[in-house]
Length: 209
Length: 202
Image (tube, rainbow over all chains, first blue to last red; front, top):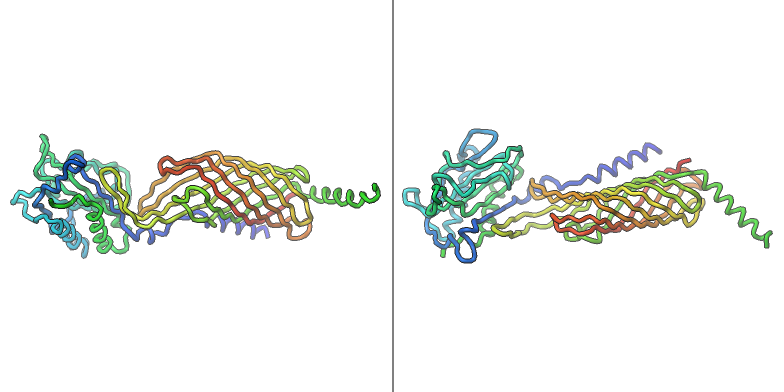
C-alpha cells in the first residue's frame, strides 16, 4: 500500500512538468521583419523610390560558427536554395521592381543568408549597414556575434540600399526578415516558402509607388 | 437531566480519545486548478497538478500544517501577426504558467467522525510563478515570487473506522500577489479541486 502511495506521487509529479510537443512547436516558422525607420516613416518610404534590384540567384550566403563555408549551393541543400531564392526574387518582382544585374547600378540589393548557431534576435548587429559594398557574400558579412552557442538556424533576408551610403561608405539595411527555425521544421522547403510569403505580407510598405 | 446527558458525554469523550490515536496526517493528491485571472495568458483549467502536505492535529478542533503544490497551466494562441515599432512578428504561441506554492496553514475540524473529518483551513505562504512562452524553438521566460493566501474547505475520509489510511478531497481558492510586467500579467487567482490519499500518523 505504501508502495502504491509512492507510485501515485511519482506519476503525479512526472505528469506536471509539461512542455509543448516538438512537432507542434515546429508547425509554423517564426517570421520577424524589421524596417529602418530612418528611411520608412510617416513622411517617406524609400521603397516608393526604388525601381531596380539585384539578387544572387544561384546561392545563399552562409554564416556559421560550425564551418568556414561562406555560401550554400542547391546541391548542399537540395530543394531548398533555388526555390527559396526564386520565391524571394519573384516576390520583389511582383511588387513592381525590376531585376537587373549589379552592372546596371540597381537601387537595392536583396541578400539572402542562412545563419547557423546564432541567437535569433540579439546576435546579429551590422551597425549602420554593409561596409564597402551592398552586395556580396565574400568579405562583407561581419556580424557582431554574441558568442554563446545555440542550435538555431535562421534564414535572413535583407534589403540593402545601394544609393545612399554614409560618409564611411556603409550601405544602410532597409529591411530584414528573420525566418526560423530551419533546423526544427519537418518540411524545410514548404515551411520556408510559406514563411517568405508571410514576410512580404506583414511588410505592406514594400511597394513601388 | 444529568442522567440523560451521560451517554452524550460518553460519546464525545470516546470520539476525542479515538481521534487522538493519530497525531497527524500526510496527504498527497491530484490537484486541478481553474484560473480566474489572466485568462488571456493561460485560460485553460489544469489537471496537471499535485498537492502534498502534512497536518498536525493539536486537538479535536484545531490543527496546523505545511503544504506544497504545483500546477502547470497552459494555453495555445493560434498564429497571429504582432506589430511593434519598426517591425512585426508572426508566430503561434504556447503560453505556460508553472505555479508552485509553499505555505503553512491553520485548520479547524468541524467534527472528528469515525470516517469523516470535515475541515476548513487558511494557508499563507509564498508562490513561485514561472511564465513561459514557447514559439517554435524559442522561449521567453519571466519568474516571480510573491505572497499567496489560500482559504480551503474539505474533508478527510477514512477507508475504515479509525483506519490509518484514507482519502482527502478539498476545494480551495488561491490569490497570489505575483505580477509579470514583462508579459503584462497581473495578480493570479484560481480555484483548486483536490482528490488525494491520506496516511494518518501516530
